[in-house]
Length: 345
Ligand code: AVJ
Image (tube, rainbow, N blue to C red):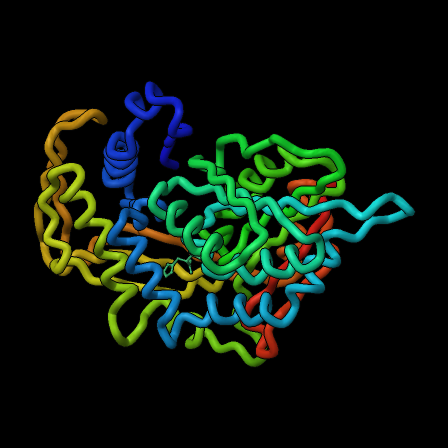
């Protein structure tokens, strides 16, 4: 995971700039067998733009399905998240979003919260300053009544904002099936890091893509990662271009094929980059170590992403493993995607 400290802490930024984290990650991943490149490397400026494009592709149903769930159920989601047992005053929600990106879907939930409570504090957390700027602009322009407080942080390891007002409850949003990028152990770790910063009664809204089943073909899931226009392929190859730009590597990204496969045993889509020929790549010496001379044999791969697909039982167990109790799940009519509300216990 990249470490980017809060903007105010200039020393930490210098000690651990994004490019240093990229250099370390690339070295560790590319000398491993099988070779790997962590999915957070996708999201430089170009990659974030390509991801935005992916969310609009006809094959990429995830974003549309989740947005439709929000559009249909936002009031109920906010009402349930605000619900109390006993006769205490209903709390005011503060919404914190992990990996907010440009917050395009969040506006629907924020509008529902403003409707219920008049105003709402929204705290997007992301490693990307540009994404947070876009999120702030987007929400300020479209949802009156929201106070936006950004935080630059890696939510998987770093603390969340904790300037809690009296009689407020945190609703943490972790949407878009971002949790799907983590293996089960790491996913539990991410949710435990979040849980450690919440109080009992705080809420988590978790978006999860669902696995193939009745009415959802493996082919449908695969197509979402293998679009006809080749945007996902460009997104995948951009990792190599990024290593060229930031580390001075000399990958020919066109000499690698985008490959997406369904791993049934692990219930996940895997993305790989497969070398189309025997080729050599050099990464000059950098903060992470000496120059690297890599040899790829024909068809040798680098594993760039896992995207886990869930069952509702699996969601329940994952939440329980981090001391959250699943209280409600909303799905779209085709049962492609699930939005899950859980209470911190
Ligand atoms: C942002 C992690 C949810 O796994 O579907 C999109 C990223 N990768 N196309 C996903 C992604 C390829 C996406 N997540």
